[in-house]
Image (cartoon, rainbow, N blue to C red; front, side, top):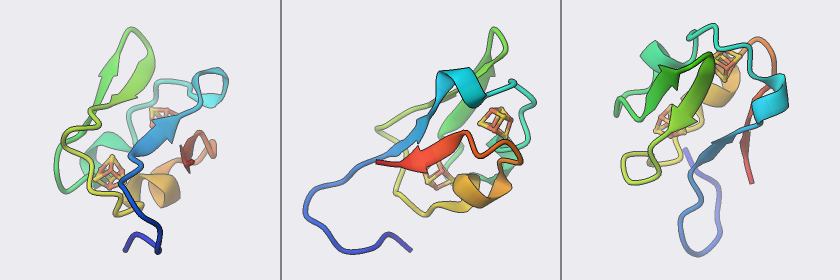
Length: 65
Ligand code: SF4
Ligand code: SF4
C-alpha cells in the first residue's frame, strides 16, 4: 500500500543500481515494469505505488521517491 501523501509518485528505478535482471517485472500487478537494454523501466501511467517491486529487487534499485 502506498503511504500517505498527496499526488502519486510512481516507482523509480535507480539506473546505476539496476542490473537488468528482470526480477521486479513479474512482481508488478499492473505490468508497469519492462526491461529494456539491460535496464528496468517503470511506466508511470500504470504504476499504482503498491511497492511490490521495491521488495522484489535484490539490488535495492527501486525506490519510491
Ligand atoms: S510500485 Fe507496484 S505498480 Fe508500481 S511499478 Fe512497482 S510493483 Fe508495479
Ligand atoms: S529487480 Fe532490480 S536490478 Fe533487477 S531489473 Fe528490477 S530494478 Fe533492476
